[in-house]
Length: 192
Image (cartoon, rainbow, N blue to C red; front, side, top):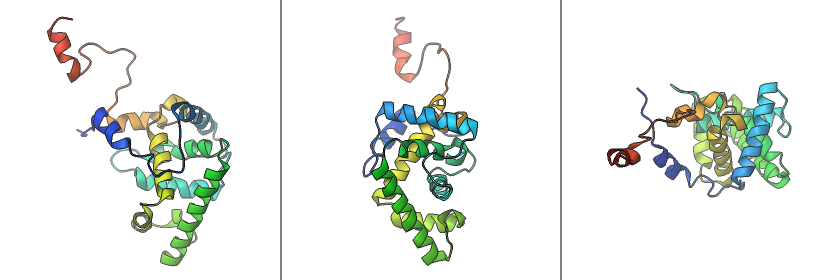
């Protein structure tokens, strides 16, 4: 049986994700980007903002941040579509920053492993390069976009097929029967 992180623990641990990121998103911005991403993913559209190489590189990075193992990861959740929409929403400066970070990562892949692209490396090589840059603003920005796309509501383009919901143990029900959770147990016992 999978061990789920409580919603409170998840929110507490994810609160610092935006720190050091060059991208700042409000909830309406995330919802709009998710909605556009969902439409693009379902139609099989080409990326609006990212080149094919940029999309492959960012998808590979996201796949190492939230890898596919016994559970689906960022690849299955389609977070690269979310990234494409966020970076295309009048964020030319942030897009150029991300592209510069991708180019630096490609240079490191060429120097360290004689590979033209990061996404062509095996997972151990990718992890080695990402570990070297994990304290950078570029990595913080891509991590933030990955997590935002991973756990945003599926109807808004994030967490395709509710993959993010499954990972944190969120049960998306139309209605809940009391008691709703451990915090409501005393409420139910008092007969309120």
